[in-house]
Image (cartoon, rainbow, N blue to C red; front, side, top):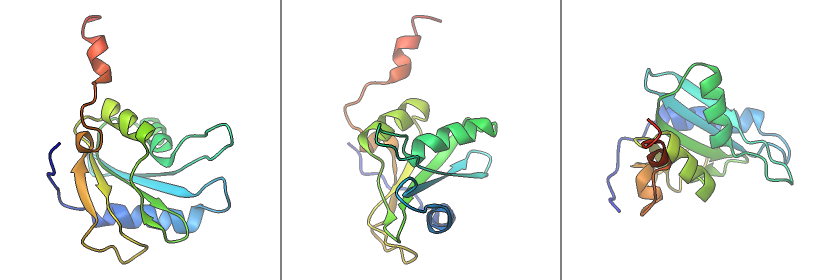
Amino acid sequence: MTTEAHHVDHELVQAAAQVARTRCRGDNHTMAAAARARDGRIVTAVNAYHFTGGPCAELVLIGTAAAQGIYELDTIVAVGDRDRGVVPPCGRCRQVLLDYFPALKVIVGQGQGQGEDDRVRAVPIADLLPESYVWADHQLDAE
């Protein structure tokens, strides 16, 4: 596992925090995500909590981006409601993000609310899921 850190996209963190403050209401929507597309656009989304295991904000964001014609993401971050700050992706999201965007950077750390501190950093998705397989490998034989 490398510990390579990248520049933190604070505009992205602020975009996710704004969505968390203004759109996450009640128990159904408690997390917001924001991602920067390769062309510079920012996409946002919220989770859809459900007792059956609804999708996390990061997964909703992948679909939202695709609906807008965005298929290449550079950086992603998730922020919790009630000023919980930056929240790292769960294991399922880590695997999906790695599968879809193997060069993706993920902003993680202990930032709280609007005053993110130096512990917030951007790391390659592969660092968050070491020793993993690559989902696309099974498609190589089909080509």
